Figure 1: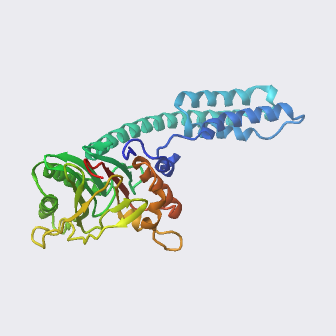
Figure 2: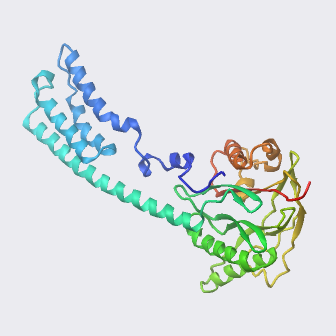
Figure 3: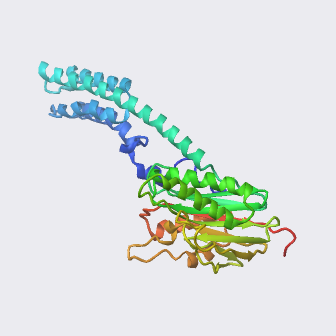
Length: 369
């Protein structure tokens, strides 16, 4: 399975940056010691005294960036020792210079202590936040009944695991149901709506016999959530899929969003699905959702992608041609298909600014061709 919510993806960790909570790079840890060693070596090698002692004053502040208080104190003490040992001939610094260096070293130790405490608190808070987000949208299982599942999620907001997109695949008494959608907004502000919709979906899977009834349940959930908040205007687009018990048929309901692409015999087929009203706008009072039934064959795969994929543009403003590119990855294992599309998407549009969601469903029809 191509998991979506474990560690932060490499690209997201890089984007978060060293000064935004990532681990300091190796050069930042080595730089203070390298500078100290370089000054000492230059003084020992040079036949004449060099006026470079001022460089040593930068070592304790540099140590603050990547070292703890103990290492910072050791480096500060070494700076004072080097300044006072005659063999280095650092122009015999006066008492004022030594006191200044000592003051900077002590202040650097204090700052390093504060930074270390802050970093430890950030690590704890980040771990709690990631655990909470994984509780809202847990990792997708590799197989649900007769359907293999693989998904990929990249949140637009750096450092988060959940944004405005969502998906889930659940088995119930009426078969395997899947949902993929996009709520209004993105980032952490949309997490509450995502949690509400997924909770309603998981309940509807257990007691609603038809996919259109599941869509109405999700619509009602959003209507109720926005009723007590003036000008809330909560809405979401979603695609619901309902697989028959033998996985030879899938019924699809599209609410404000295009349906999945069907990968069959190396081709990407666009299904004739007319989207109905988005969720949260009174679906139950509008025209009943249209259900499209698709007969499945062995080897068929359904590929769902959010608008973060289909609306991604390159430098010339051209949209990512998903339907054209997808057949080139048709031979990939379902678990790797979404990752291959993601890599191709990033090449097309390196600066993806929207939530990106992909869901690959590979049913195994029983008793079919």
